[in-house]
Structure formats: C-alpha cells, structure tokens
Image (tube, rainbow, N blue to C red):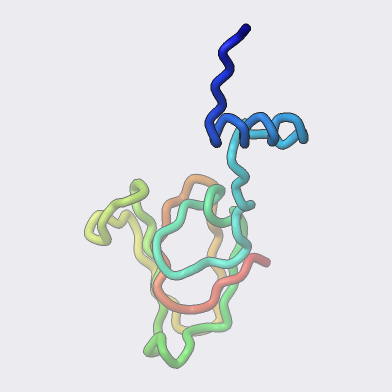
Length: 109
C-alpha cells in the first residue's frame, strides 16, 4: 500500500492542473496609454510614443514637469533632463526611458 499524503496546497494545485489552469507565470497588464504621476519605465509601465496634454490643471499651479532619469529608483537630483510644460504640449517617449511625471494629464496619441 502506498502512503499518499496530500496537503491543502497540493490538492489545490492538482485541481488547477486537472482543469487546465496554467501556473507557469503571472499575468501582467499591458503598458498604459496614459502617464501617471510618479516614476515609470517606458515600454514596461507605459507605451512608447508621442504623448499630448492640454496643459496644467488648476492643482498643477500652472506648470507640469517630466524628468528623465538614468535608472529606475534614481533621485530627482540625478535627472539627465527636466522639461516644464505650461500649455498644450507634446512629448516623445522611447522604450527604455525612465521618467518621473509631475502634473498634467498625458495621453498617447
């Protein structure tokens, strides 16, 4: 007689496998088509391409900023470029760019 020990986790895995559910990886959301406030990696968090804004909102105090950083987790003092936007504006973002966004609503064209 074989000694078969099942744990709750083992049973759950067996049920999932029997129903055809893959456990190979976790699903990741596609990169967004809108920039959000804060740091993001183009091609990973947001799609590459040209983004547009109609300008700062009232809460943006008349100006918005995009900082280009050398790597994810870099500090603002390490920015390689900073652009300020005060009206209708466009910005081209390339895959691999690491940016920090402050203000404005940016959408992919």
